[in-house]
Structure formats: C-alpha cells, structure tokens
Length: 357
Image (cartoon, rainbow, N blue to C red; front, side, top):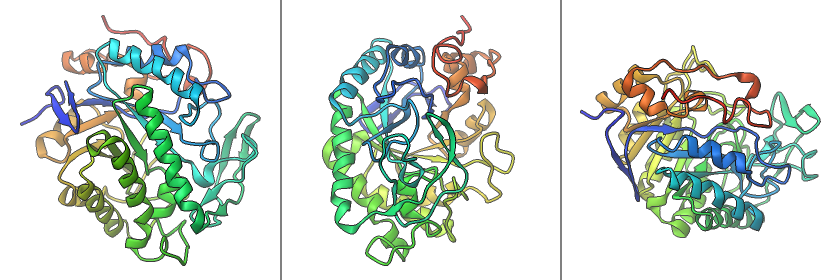
C-alpha cells in the first residue's frame, strides 16, 4: 500500500516521494514577465517535493493577463528560467513548467491586446491589473483560422521550457482559463468543429496535448483539469460525461500524469457543492493520477491507500512550509500562510518562511 513518502515513477521522472508542489501564482516576476533571482531561491527552497509544478506561466503576450507572472515566449524568459531550474536541480529537485493561456480572463490594460476565448462570453468578477482590480471585458471569439497559431504558441513555449532546463511541461486546462473555456458548454457556444458535442469541445485539448507530446515527449507532458463545478464563471451542464471523456483522450496519449483540482463544499480556496469527478476519471485514466485541493496528511494518505490517487499536490502548505515532506513525515507542526503576501512583490511571505530544522 503506497504512502506519501514512497517513490513513484511519473513519465520520465523518478520522484522520491508523492508530496508534490501544486502550481501557485505568486507575482514575483518582472513587469516583462521575466523570472527573478528571488524566484530561483523560492523554488530551490522547495526542492524536496517529489515534483514541483511551477506557477502558471504565460505562453504568449495574448495569453498573459496576471501582473508580474512569469512568461515563456521570449529569449530573456528562457535565460532567467534556466537560473530557476539550475537552482532546483542543484538542490536535488525536479520541476515542470505549467503552460498558461488565460483566454477571456486576460485584461487588455496589461498589454493592449483584446482577450480571446472559445466564444464572446464575458467572465464575471474583476481582473487583477497593474492599476488594481477592474471588470473583465468581452473577449472576441477565436477564429477557426487562428487555432493552428494558438497551438504553435503552446509548442513554442514548451520548446522554450525544455531549453530552460525544465523536466517537462503541464498544460493548464483548468480553473476557467482558455482550454477550460473550450471544454465547457457554459462558455463554448461555437457552431464549428470546436463547439457543440463533447467530442468537438475536446478537440482543442486533444490537439494541444498531442502537439506537446510531439514536441517534448509523452513522458514529459502532463495536464491539469478542474472538473467539479464552476470555475471563474466557466461551467458545464454534464461534468460527469465531459471530464471522463477528456481523461480517456489523455490516457490514449500516454501522458506522464493528470492532475485534478476539485474543491469540496467546505473548500478553503474555492468551494463546490458538486461531488468530485475523480472516481469516474480514475476508471478512464490508467496513468499517474494526482489529486489537489485542501489535502492534509490524513486525507492524502487515505487517497493513496484507497487507490483514488497516486500522488497529491499541496499548494498553500508548500507556500508556507518549504520543507513540507519532512514536516509531514516527522509530524512537525505546519506554519500558516499569510494571504496578504500571496501576490505581493518582494521576499516577505515568499522566501522568508522558515524550515523546521
């Protein structure tokens, strides 16, 4: 019976434990989305994770809509991410880059580019901008002729990730961002090959993942989904059909692992009244399945023991506890995270959390 502290092979990687670090937006890059020395220190501090998945990282100007978030489309991005990966590897760690296109959640004030989406539907709520929060704007529907260019943007970012020394890439297809906007019928109202039936709405996910597999290898490609309920205004009328079908499509491609973010009704960062889709996905996806959202030691161990998951990604616990695997293994009390410093600039609440020993 596996535990969180047992090794696991995930694609090309041999991971020393199953306590993985979830992707966490932290806003410590430059205004040009270039990684900083502080980011290298932050990730290296957490190198004892079985695997680190980076903060969501923009694949293009069009897809980047978060202040001070990292990018992976330019030469300077590659050069400075290489500093990060070298620091993590020197500390004995493994690190995947999460590839991000925000779709309709991009605010044009950041780069002067109108957001794109599956359809011209406007997200609820407000965007983070350099001037503070502002209402989201209506995106334009991505034209059919633009799809090859979009896929090429993902491939270019993946190529840059490998050049920067990452061990692989994770496609961000969750949390109401662009791929998720294509997947779900609440945001995808298209009448062409990418809209309507489930198989059509899966097409972009299939094509992008296939392109990443062709570029970096299936054993260095992963995907993140968030199946159960609304995410930033993106929802589907039949999640129990859509997401198992997505999992089956990804299983056919032989990806390294699939990560699922599924908050419960008492979630501490997002809530859902709908039950997890993970049990249905487990039936259709035979590879390494990783669960995320409000897991602690007891819940994580139980998920592994039951066969529900093969590894667990921890977010805020890793944010505030750089030595999280050791703390969990030794029963050491965890440090609480400070929400005020989640997205602030500077070292405070980023590299200042102490190790237990």
